[in-house]
Amino acid sequence: MIITIDEQNPVPIFRQIVRQVKMRVVSGELVGGSPVPSIRDLAVRLSINPNTVGKAFRELEKEGIIVMKRGVGAFITKNPPEEFMKGFGNTVIDGKIQDLVQTARSLNVPKKTVMKKIDIAYNGGKDEQ
Image (cartoon, rainbow, N blue to C red; front, top):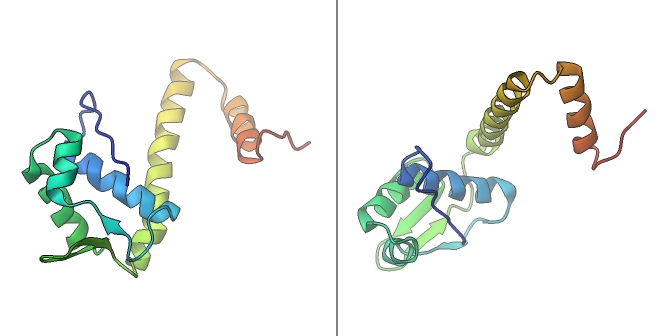
């Protein structure tokens, strides 16, 4: 499992870890039963405090995304909550859309142009006319 930390990002590091694990679960990259690196290993790899990783893992466990088995390790839950699986993707998309709209407005790109570009991108680069 690849996790990266952006130290310039104002989002707390533990939240960056939580978000990346959630993204990989929703995308299917991490499936139920997949092992998660140990708190110590991930902390060493990211050069961060193990307490930060522990905080992220506790949140993921509380939300039903991972299960931690003492002496064995942490694993992706076999059946993540359905509301999480449906809702998280929409939450991510909502944030990306807000960023896109803000950028388009700041550059004075007309809404019609933005919508056309979204349609083209959604159709794999093909303009449906």
